[in-house]
Amino acid sequence: MTVTTPLSGWRGRIILATLALAGVVAALVQTLVLPLLPLFPQWLGISVADAQWIATSTMLAGAIGAPLFGWLGDRFGLARMIVLSLLLLSVGSVVAALADTLSVMLIGRVLQGLSAGIVGLALALARTTLSPGALPWAVGVVSGTLGVGTGLGVPLAGLLLETLPWQSVFWIAAALGAVSAALVALLVPHRPSRSAKKFDIAGAVVFSGILLAILIPLSTLGTAGVTAGGVVSWAVAAAASVWWVRHELRTASPFVDVRFARRRPIVSSHVSALLIGAAFFLSFTGTVYVVQTPTVDGVGLGGSVLMTGIVQTPASLASIAAAPLATFIATRWGARRTVTAGAFAVAIASLVRLPVLDDPVVVAVCALLVSGSASFTFAAMPLVLMDAAPVHATGTVNGLNIMMRQIGSASAGVIGAVVLAATADAAAPSRDTFTWLFGLGAVCGLLAGIALLPWRRRAQRLISTPSPSPAPERTPR
Image (cartoon, rainbow, N blue to C red; front, side, top):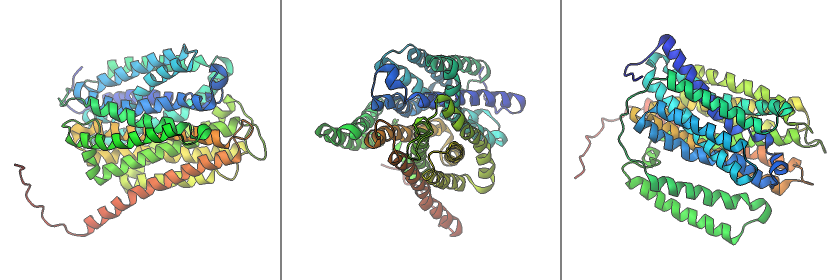
């Protein structure tokens, strides 16, 4: 059905619940395999570094899929693209379930990763479909599904592997994607498209190449060190980045609208999303490995995949509670201040993880603090973007923000593999491994908070000082 007026009441609640379910399913596939990463080398006959790409490939696909489906949503309809994303998720899950080699597994994981843009699409759809009074809470619920889905991934995988083969993780994801796609198609109304812009294929292809040229040589640092090929790859990425920025500035419909970098609230939110995404993934990786590492010299819990899920369960509950809490605080204290506070909380929570690495209660509480703080930050961030972005660009801007989050997580996945390869002692992570993982997470959280401070102070000065009347715009010749 096609609607043009805002919806509220029971219809609005049904739409919101459906969009939230789609967001949870999309986020679930991001972390569903994380507790399995230490076991994939045995199952598929690959190295630890190669196994890390099973997670990283999904993040990279999400980095491309988020802005791509944001554009497709603005062009062909938001609800339709949510359905398409969920169907691709299901297909990718089936491919991964049938995989017996790394290459086939990566194909499935890439298809799953393209669903990362669902939350951005759902946020844009909520903005154009629901009544203005319900919008702040709807934004909090939908954006909070990222924390809920990622938090549920590890416990669910742990429970499934107790009684079923590892392929069941992907079969469950395929079923959830298919059911969610059907519900969205039936219950979520279609909004007529208001955009006719073209897609920037060159910008998307070059951007993908830049990411791969940076991350692939980076992933080999722990085993091969800096190589001549890696240096050449990074030099090519730097040169391509210069061309890409100039191309995006000159293109009428860019893949990434770098012109928004002139708006401090938007660029600050994107930088923060990248850094918090990295901190969150570093914490997640550290939790998985500290639980499954044999206890030696006060490091490791010697647990199973099920124990990993149990330890991560409080963090999942914290992610669920953090989203409405962030919305409540943002509507009273301001979204910008809420995001800043959440970023600094991630830094503090990551630092707290360093001293104790052999107590399951302490490990669980620390994982809870990081996951809750990150979910809190992510839930408030779309409110900042909606205040700064025009309505017609809502899907694109939110998709770009999720893309930055995916890039941060993908980079953290590669960095995590490097740290594991460089610091593992007798094929098992050492205390140095977790010092690096959690320490880098703390640095990322701190930088994310700092990235927001200059803009916030500038905004306060503008409020307190009367501004002169704006000069009339000059029409370019």
